[in-house]
Image (cartoon, rainbow over all chains, first blue to last red; front, side, top):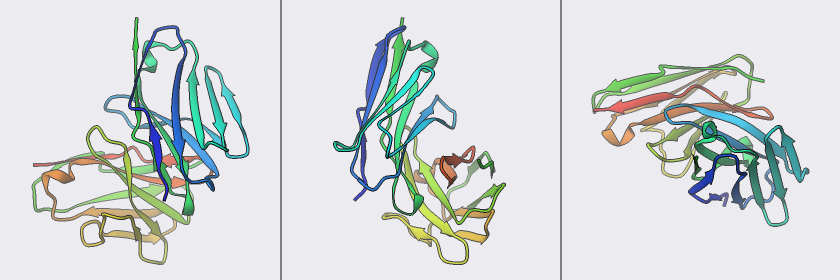
Length: 110
Length: 111
């Protein structure tokens, strides 16, 4: 079946890079997404990558996709306190439905 | 892109009652999706709403508890029936074109 897994917690120092990892099981996934959710707020789409790509960069964000290992990562360069949030990885599976990981809580400290 | 209007944005309901959540999309889409996000949890898909046919429910969700309507290609409703405090969650509707678009969510508290 479809499953998405993420580590639950990451702590980084302000100014360092953050790397959030995700693994998925559905090899037929066409798109993979990263969402950000701040406390009490809705989901914000950060970026997404098509399955035939292995990298996508958007300002401070870099997404790496290893399709062979079904591994996705999100790198945030120069992490700021405003980046503190929960980050959800999601895959688009059969019938266009999204399967979400449990979310990684990113804590940025001075 | 797609703009989704979802309402109500929040509600506090008595146990045993029902709440209907509405979702309006600014473009025609074949499938609309309903998710639940329980406190401190990730999003779980409840069902897929197809226009012209019955909704398809995920494991653990049943039509009697979460009836769904899909009268046309831009609108859907989700009803949370016979509510209990365990139903307190954020409920979100979504459509997928290339990106996945979400409504603002309905924060439901059952007392």
